[in-house]
Image (cartoon, rainbow, N blue to C red):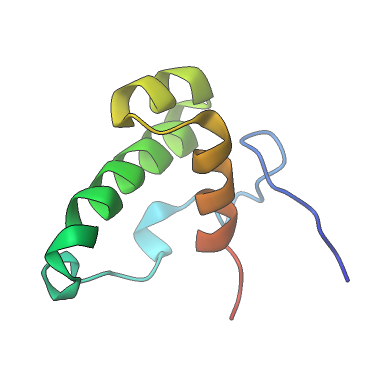
Length: 78
């Protein structure tokens, strides 16, 4: 099993195109998850666009490790 973990530098260009990612209806999420999702999305988007993990972490309020874990979940093919 491949346990490769993508970062800004190793993320394939086609995965970095956020416009191609699945749309999530945030309002369909439970109220308790909406803020968490929105903050993580903000952090992931900032990181993918700029490559600045620390800045993304500071902006969204989640750890750098959390951003990387969630980024990798986003680009995992189900």
